[in-house]
Image (cartoon, rainbow, N blue to C red; front, side, top):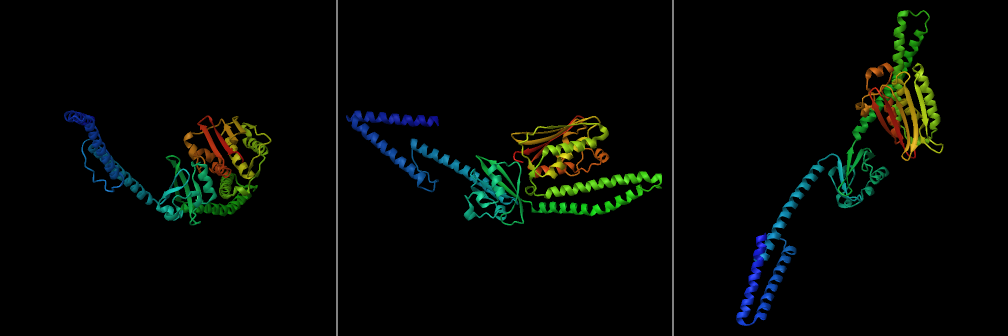
Amino acid sequence: MHKRITGHLQTLFWGFVALIVIGLLIGELSWTLALGLSTYLMWTIYQSIRLHRWLYQIKDKKNLPESHGLWGDLFEGLYQIQYQNKLTQDTLQSMVGRVQLSTNALKEAVVMTNAKGEMDWWNNAAREVLGFRDESDRGQLITNLLREPLFKRYFDEKKYQEPLDMPSPVNINLSLRITITLFGEGDHLVFAQDITRIRRLEQMRKDFVSNVSHDMRTPLTVIRGYIETFQDLEDLPQKWQRPLNSMAEQTSRMEKLISDLLLLAKYETDKLEELKLPVNLQAMFNLIVQDARTLSGAKQQQIELLYELNEACSFIGDDRQLHSAFSNLVYNAVKYTQERGRIILHCWQNSEGVHFSVKDNGQGFDPVHIPHLTERFYRTDSSRDNSSGGSGLGLAIVKHVLINHNATLEIHSQEGKGSEFICHFPRGC
């Protein structure tokens, strides 16, 4: 490239020298230079017009204008740049086409919007479950087409860590799970998954658990009645006392399990909006501490309450659910803390909301169990729960109570050094 430029400059230089020589030979230097420079200027203008016409008027870019010297190299260079750009454009277009084809094959609805929420593209599934139409909806705000208030708030708040469940705008019998990912300069990638079948299976499970629990209550009550009758007999043989006591213990455990199952099913279906009332947290905690000390009994554990909420703090929620959640956490601490151990209940508030923690110096557990603790029937040590009579549902109940109050549960533990469970309630509870 450098050699070509040098050659063009040399050609211009020697051409100018030739004009001077010719002008001196004929005795008309000025006219010769003027004529030569004018001719070169006209040729340059002509080549510029050809270049402009080739760039903006001729559709077939393959017919490259022929020229020589500097202009020939310029035409050739522009053609090569344009050819490379065309190859790159074709490659990108092919990749975009493949991405669109693969996305259209997905069962989940996919929608792309810009930072304002104006829709740029969507796949076939979005047409089916969201009802979008190519001819009229392109460029429309997605919140104008999906008018569900929950979706608009979810989209505008840009808190996409958790998905949003909502009914389909096309068919209210379809349940959708919406997830949004940000990319580029604030653009949105919206996914909508049909979870109708999952919801139905979940409802079937809840109905099954509820129905079986209700049906088991009556026979267990009858069994307990007969066991208590036999235990009250004065002439009961000694050899029957131990099996009857074991039967009574297991019957009580089954009744506790059924009670927890029914309570969990109720909390999963309760509509908290209808249950929210002012809650006297101090009175609730005082009662829970009193019951915990009674449960501790001969263990002589040190149970303390640190209540740091001011009187102006207004807490709104369901009193029954909150009492159930807090008492589950405290009673677990009592059960799994050694004799003369220490349990601290702490309630405080800050700019983020109201917080309640239960901390003990008991057995603790391996932190590897923390992600699974709130699952139904999950046990860190099955033998320990069998001996304590735990149902494995306590923390599941706590989780659903906190979900109903838009709260979260934070867990810390170290084996042999104790545990801490912290409930975080947002401002305005």
